[in-house]
Structure formats: structure tokens, C-alpha cells
Figure: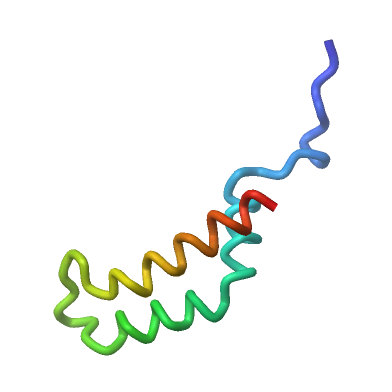
Length: 63
């Protein structure tokens, strides 16, 4: 039984990084929203921006 060489495999974190890299508009919007009040971050803060980023990353991962 042969296994793929480690050079041929893409590690999951590399796949994730490439997907996030395709979502620069969404990640910038999320980052700006968090930065507006970074000393007082709460759950649900910037939820709309986060969900847009999440959807973009999920679409990019599927490609």
C-alpha cells in the first residue's frame, strides 16, 4: 500500500489559510469592526461581519 508523499499533501491549515486569503474584503470588514471596540469585545459583537466571513471561507474551501 502506498501513501501520498508529504510534499503532495496539503495540510488542513494550509487549505484553510488559502481559503481565508480569498476573503480579503470580508476579513477586513470583520477586523475593522472588532478594532472599533477591541477593549470591550463581547459575544455576538460584529456577528454580521463574522457570518459573512464564515460564509466566504466555506465557499472558498469547497472550491
